[in-house]
Length: 370
Ligand code: T4K
Image 1 (cartoon, rainbow, N blue to C red):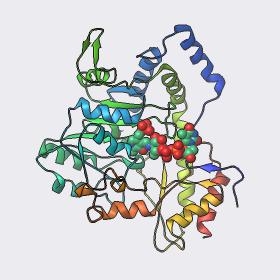
Image 2: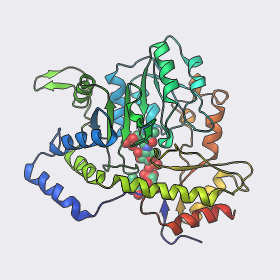
Image 3: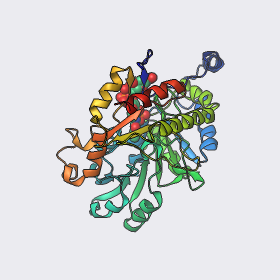
Image 4: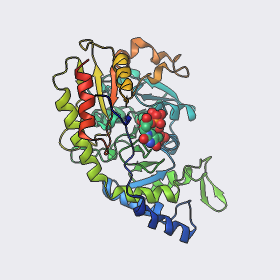
């Protein structure tokens, strides 16, 4: 059945407009538009409480937050990371003059494979930057053991991992820092936005200085910081969003379940298992299109598009295959067979709160009838 309305891979959850008006009124009354105003402070506190983390520093977007996280810990030299992510992960290294060292991923979780990290460590390695891809937690315990053994920092790109739990606590509490994205396409969004989660007040202070040009007070600049501050409009929208976040995640869980039921018997379609135990956020619904499926991944992608269903191939092309990374020794296909295979097989199906059951069914029917 061809969809009348286009169905995108995601769509932001928008609260009723009239509920946002009082926030705007306050901004207009106060005339404080940015630079750590009242909504900025309220959102930081509200997020610490909701996420169950100690300290958070809001940012204008996740990419600037990643760049700043590396600076906050004075990371340099080489950083071990995954090629299977959005380009911002590796770009944040290049922006800091750091050499990315790509390590292959686990075929089941599509997260960095901890078994392959140690051989990639050199005297220049200072940190590991894994990604909780699609919001599925990395093997944080194993990664920490390696980091401790070699004296490395761990910065998680947790852009997809808003609200995700691991062993009863926030997954964002692992490693030295975790970086979130609040982009419009994310589970929790502030139009554009991001944050760094950190474990102590001293680190938060350094991060807060770095996101404000390095200013400590009116006349003191301690580092070549950037402008990474979140505005009051974005922070206010975040506060409003937070009120309905549990319902939003619950709605996504039902869509996730419906896809899994609908696709369970389709030969050649493999649904990536999500973190169990009610701890996932269902931010994406990735499937791998294997050789037993009658169509290639790209033919299925096109078939969906022809039917007004705009699924996306996150994460294809692989970061290591982009021109600015391609010549790195660790970008070689022989070093990254699992990641290359996943990038060539993956499709993320639409998942968002306004998606209706019959739209989910028409996606699964189209896939099943190929
Ligand atoms: N690390 C990871 C692992 C990430 O995935 C990301 C971002 C980052 C770091 C960096 O965080 P930020 O600096 O972005 O905060 C999108 C997003 O722009 C990007 O935030 C996200 N990851 C990435 C996975 O996806 P595009 O270029 O694919 O987005 P776009 O504009 O094609 O949007 C996808 C679909 O979403 C559209 O077809 C329609 C829908 N959409 C999009 C927007 C922007 C809407 O319905 N409304 C909207 O406002 O990158």
